[in-house]
Length: 260
Ligand code: CO8
Image (cartoon, rainbow, N blue to C red):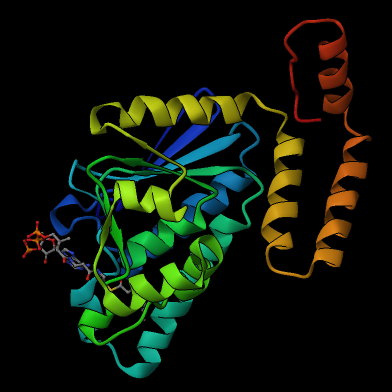
């Protein structure tokens, strides 16, 4: 039996998933895409997991893209299938009812940037480089990158990155809104885990409400988006955690959220 290309470890309600193909800079072959899909599906169902961190093995790459060697041999039909497997994974992450933080520890290129953009937050090492270099391979992004980059950073940045293919450094990625935070490489893990711990201690139903309202709201008009927000807001009045959060504020103590 071959080892899984995705490692998983849990700490205090946070599951860390690591793409583990360091000799190939964690490139996404079909086996890795499927292993990630299964890992995210399992995490969604696991009541003990409240937040996730996604990263790549080694210090050089988060994920350097879809596996070019594997793509080189594909027919058009197989290429379409490969793209759909990747898009399904990205959508699963984006629609996960728990927050996912990408810990961008190095190159996030092509499918690697697409993977990071499907996560809800991105923390990058100052040494990271991010880009959509597919045009250089005679391709375009195929795991939803044209669409997520457009929504995340706007048309100018999407066209610049996808047309020119040149990666940007972490500082420029922050300027473009592609990442939320940039930290020194040596502090990346500690800073990301701190953020994940904060998410894991928050009220899970409230986080889920935010994810639903923001992710779905970003894909529809303002009227529908406001309806999503009101529906989520109203639903939370039925939760024990809302009573606990507001009571804790009034009693000047720390809330204990129970996911109920
Ligand atoms: N796929 C396969 N193998 C890769 C990839 C990749 N994306 N990236 C790196 N590797 C391999 C290299 O081939 C090399 O393997 P080997 O040692 O066996 O020769 C090993 O990883 C180390 O890489 P390098 O020697 O190239 O390391 P360098 O430090 O010299 O360079 C770079 C690092 C700049 C990151 C360089 O490896 C590079 O340019 N990689 C490719 C980046 C890229 O173009 N990514 C986009 C791929 S296309 C894509 O993601 C499309 C997504 C949508 C797909 C839709 C499907 C239809």
